[in-house]
Length: 152
Image 1 (tube, helix red, strand yellow):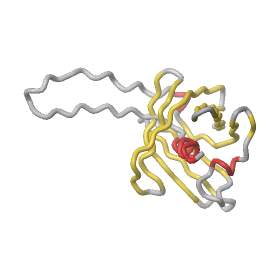
Image 2: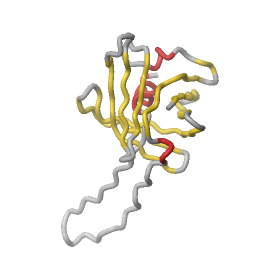
Image 3: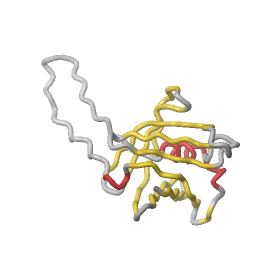
Image 4: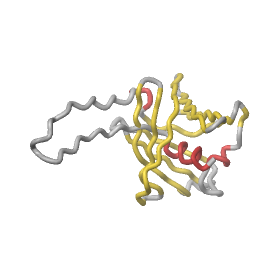
């Protein structure tokens, strides 16, 4: 369940490809270019619902902080994301950010910051689909399938 929470707060995907050379005598390999994010993913998304194994779940079960009542994620065209949870007075109770990579309808979300501090990178993967103003992210953990829905 913690991985699912991290994945939500992660809600989004970046491939930073780097080639580190040890010296001038190393052959230079051509790396594939990181795929740009589809424009329909870019923007600010509000968490609206989530399902676990086709059963709707309380939003509170996704939050990292017990006083959180809503969640928002922003996906930028530079393949980064940031998300935050808010309490009933719109105070931020938890935040995270990182990178998002996309290949077709598959994504990988890697969290590198929580509450403004660096954390060891943790990645989650799944599939995504946008239909109008609705984003659905599907993740499979062991034998459980989670579908998280956001609205733009």
